[in-house]
Amino acid sequence: MTDYAPLSLPEHGKLAHNITHFARALRRAGLPIGTGQILDAIRAVEAAGFSERMDFYWTLHACFVRRPEHRDTFAQIFRLYWRDPQFLEQMMSLMLPAVRGVQDERNARAAEKRAAEALLDGATREVPKPEGSKDPDPEIEIDASFTASTEERLKTLDFEQMSTEEMAEAKRMLSRLTLPVKPLQSRRTSADLFGKRPDGRRTLRAALRQGGEITRIEHRAHQTRWPNLVVLCDISGSMSAYSRVVLHFLHAVANHKGAGWARVHAFTFGTRLTNITRHLATRDVDAALAAAGAEAQDWQGGTRIGASLRAFNRDWSRRVLGQGSVVLLITDGLDRDDPAALAHEMQRLHLSTRRLIWINPLLRWEGFAPKAKGIAAMLPYVDCFRSGHNIATLETLAAAISNAADSGEKTRLMAALRA
Image (cartoon, rainbow, N blue to C red; front, top):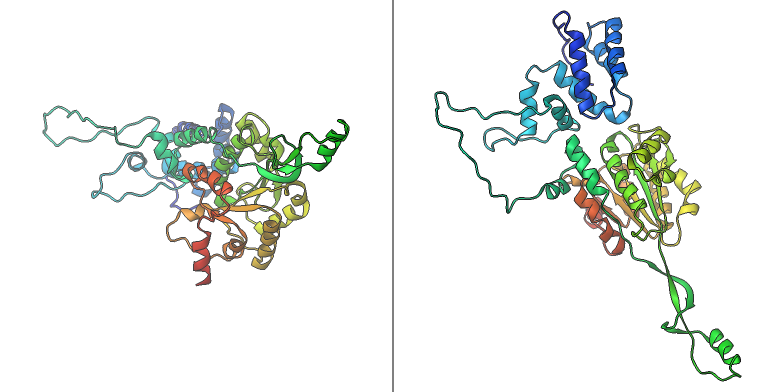
């Protein structure tokens, strides 16, 4: 929480009204707030007093915030509503495009656009006319035949920069995505009329039934099987904005019958490993993620990648890996544990799977380099290194899984690591 100057006491009798309006803005931003919580907040502020900003902040925080993912939204709306008297103009600059050359554009920080929508609540800003002008408003005609559609724009928009409405639309788009995979050829064979391998045993058995005369050569062919998809998703504080969207995508993959995967296993990790596979089987995505969030108690906590991988290799690898499994490791690689231990666990994981794909949102930054010790320790043991910060990058995962030669950005980053 950034340290601000102490708040000035508002007009007498308006504090309860202001808290109510503040709670409505939080509710429009997605926080589940009811009338009972608003009344509790008013009573809590009355008991705690209104003299120190930090006391006031944490009093309301205790009354309104129930989930870790709501902290950023609460902090942004609190900052704008209770501190800045010009918050409407500031938020308008985030909601409307700026004229290039007049003011510098910047991307909204996490939860700022959702805070803007909640506080503005449909307000619009009119373009001022020159003083004394009597001309009617000009009619603007826009030819949108060559402009990008909403879906195309959302595909390349960073998940962390999406507003509430954009995030909801992105989740609907992700629910329609699939992650198809090609079947694998097994060493086992079965009878096949058009197979390429002669089946001597079946041929002789058929000949014995006809007095020993061979009238037809029987054949066999290799069977095909579908691999498992195993997902290890980082839910620490630095990954929370992305992990929830990725879990929406994985829920769609797990419940899509035509994707071809034998089974989809999902694990979350922050400070510990949690198996949420059974929750993804729930048809309703909101109920599935709510149950997964209730079981994983380390949302938006610290990161212990090495310890979590060690727990997976020890307790789960023999159960879910094998038969050509593909592993998606979704993390930013920022770990404070021993890099040597992390490298050992990554090597063991790599040797246990057919293909290990690392999805790192940090790769969205131009000029990204593997300077962190955790990233440098993990990178040599992955088959493919890709970004996963928007819908477009998730759409390309199918090609990365099917194409064994696809290494993503690994080759470039390994060269930078050796330099």
